[in-house]
Structures are given as structure tokens and as C-alpha cells.
Amino acid sequence: MGGPPLYSQRKGHPALIGRHRPFPVTHQAAERWLNHMQQALDTTPDIDADSKIKMMNFFRHTAFFLVAGDELKHQNQGSSCKHGANKSPAV
Image 1 (cartoon, one colour):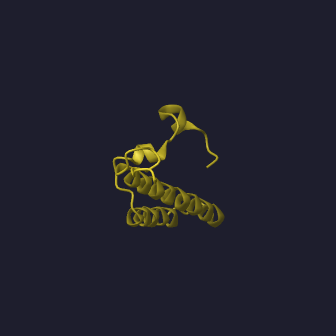
Image 2 (tube, one colour):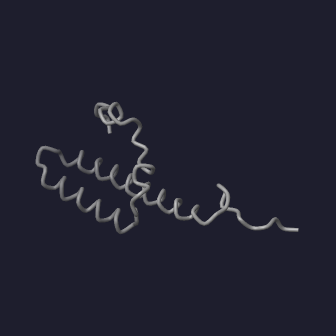
Image 3 (tube, one colour):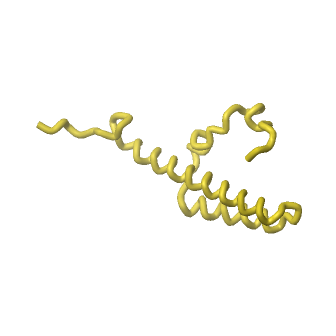
């Protein structure tokens, strides 16, 4: 979000989908997390309204990016190859 790369310097690339792989990241979980983030921003008077909007947009994008990654994880668990095709070829 434009700040110093402290997290990446300490832990490497965020790799959010990989770091969240052990956890169920559902739409409900994303909405709950977004609600907590909104409450945190609402109780932080030092952040201006425009920045809060930009931050929530970033958080929303990130939350549903993780939901999509979780859905792909579950989708690929049942397939025998990386493309999800475990059917016999058509004759």
C-alpha cells in the first residue's frame, strides 16, 4: 500500500494464498474480517476519510482474492491433474 517493505524484508513475499492455505477462507470469513477492518478504521481518528476508503477497497480486493484462492484449492483437490481433467478422452 505504499509503505516501507518491512514485512517482505523480514518474511519474504507475502504469498497470501499460501500463507492462508491451512485456513478455510470463505465468503462469510471474508465478510467478517472486512467488518473487523472497518471497525478498526472507524475507531482510528488519525486516518482521513479518503485514505479509509482506499484502504477498505484494498482490503475488500484482498479478502476476495483469498476466497478465490481457497475455492481453487478445493476445486483442485478432487482432480488427478493440474488442469482438473480426470475424464477419459472422448473417442
